Length: 236
Image (cartoon, rainbow, N blue to C red):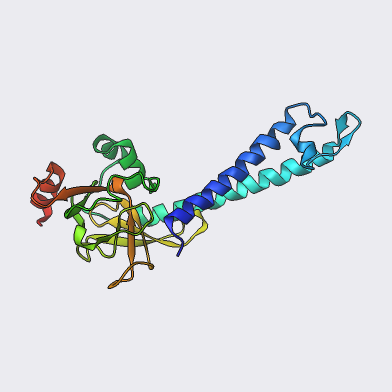
C-alpha cells in the first residue's frame, strides 16, 4: 500500500505540473509572445519573424487542457466513489455539515468530515508519550490506547491496533488514483486516517491517524464533556 506521505508527495508533484501548465501555456492565448518568452526557450512555440504559428499554439493548448480535464475528472470520480460508500452507511451519530461545523474547529472539520490530512510532524499527538486513551474528536468514543502506540517515524500518531475491534471501521479508499484502506470511527463514520500493513508485531499493522481527529485524555484526568456524553448514550 501507498503511505499518506507518498500521497502528499504525489499530489505536490501533480500540482507543480498543473501550475507550470497554467503559468506558461494557458496565458499564452492572451499575451504577446516575445523571442525570450519561456514558451520559446522551452520549445513550445517556434517564432516566424515576430509572430508565432497559431497551429502550434492551438495544439499545445488543446493537449494541455485535455490533460487538466482528465486529471480533474479522475480525482473527482474517485472521491465521489469513496464518499458515496460512506454516505450509504448508517452510523449512530449523524449530523449535517452545518451541525458538524458548529462543534468542530476548521482543521477538525477538514480532516474528520472532508477526509483531509494534516501535515506530517505538525499534529498535537504524533510524539505524545503520555499514558492514556485517544478518543474520537467527532463522537467522544474511545479509539486507541497509548499501550498500542509506537514511534513510526512518519510524523503522524501511529498505533498497531485499535482499543477494541468495533471502535473503528475500515473502508476501501480509491481516491487520488490509489487503493488504500481508510479508517473511520464507528460512531459517525468520521475520517481518522489510513491503515497500512507495515506496522510492528503482533499485528503487522500501522494505523496512521491524524491528531486533529483525536482527543487524548491522560490516565487520571477528568473526561471531557464529549466523552461523558458518549458514555451516557453507549456505555464504556
